Image (cartoon, rainbow, N blue to C red; front, side):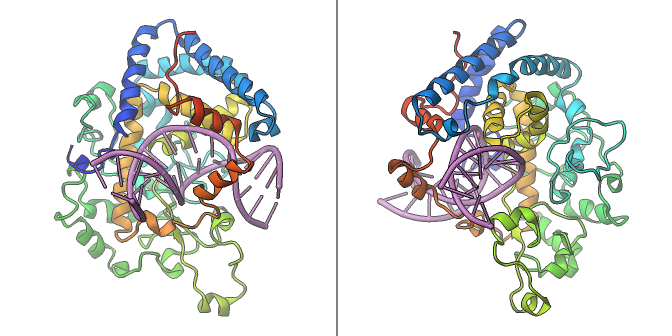
Amino acid sequence: MPQLSSGGGDDLGANDEMIAFKDEGEQEEKIQENAFTERDLADLKSSLVNESEINQSPNAAAARRGPQPEPRCYVEKHREHLNGVTKQQDGGMYKTSYPGYPFLMLPDPYLQSSSMPPSSNKVSVVQQSHGMHPLSSLLPYGPNDHFSPSPPHLPTDMSQKTGVHRPQSQDLSGFYSLPPGSVGQISPSMGWQGQPVYAGLPSCGFRQTYSSTLSASSSYPRFPHSLMLGPSGMHPTGIPHPAIVPPSAKQEHDHYDRGLKPQGEAKREKEPKKPVIKKPLNAFMLYMKEMRAKVIAECTLKESAAINQILGRRWHALTRDEQAKYYELARKERQLHMQLYPSWSARDNYGKKKRRKREKQQDSNTGGRRSAFATFKEEAAPAPLPPMEAL
DNA sequence: CTTCCTTTGAAGTCA
DNA sequence: TGACTTCAAAGGAAG
């Protein structure tokens, strides 16, 4: 795996993740036919642990909100598991959940302005609430290459196993309000077709090509000026990018732009605000984006913390191939992010959050807000998600 | 209004 | 190099 030359976690996650995954896969083979109920029981067991922990910790943040509502989901989860089996038999998630997989940034399911094809009522995958996402839409997928640089721990014929055929091109303007040709302007020039994932980055001239294509912005700074970005975080190509968060974005207002609202053109000129380029989403984040609405619908939950717990379990319950899709998507995202913002570093966003984890831990030692679940995990659970043992 | 919670993974930092 | 830290999304809840 060329891109795994360093770090090792580029594609399919950490090794320990995959070790656990292997275990789960083995378990899944055992229980493939009859054991979604067992899985649910495992969930139930886990939830009982949580609840008992909650009850034992009146201090806990979870307790302050009452027991985790997660158990409400078990019936629905079972149903979803069954549906998942159907999906896999029917060609996998691409077919069911990724109606436009090569162009993942489908309209936000929460947005009324959805331009999804009428035939699709699926939950879109990595759509952005604050803009369309060209990363996936421009992902260098060829019809057959989506997993071509297979992760070392994945079967090399994964793409064949998934049997997914992604259309090479679709009318992106149907998904994005792009000027005609804007996509084509980028995609071919990026030279992604059939290109090794990272092999070409240093030398293939992708960046050069990209720069030349985006000549008007070839010298744009890391954080493009608003004039270049456009009113809503548009990339100089004209394609909005979710990683570019315009200063006016509510979401970033929460974290980054508090107190910096423009109060006039003079101030804007005086203190031009740099749009925040956010980190590309990792595989799990992409998975969460896709599945969150589903879980919310099934569980009638809205609290993200609880939903994320469910999603974390489901993530571990995914098959290897299913996870691989998201790892691959995440890798593509990172790749394109790197192309779009060559000089961007995750460090750029360090310190944006108000509190540091260290401060949190210090507070927790002194009785700060800390969930019993977290404490339980640290004290009793070495792994983030204990394997689903038989009850 | 601000921060926390909660998850996994990527990337940064530090010894 | 390994351990640790921070951030990415999300929205309700608490301070």
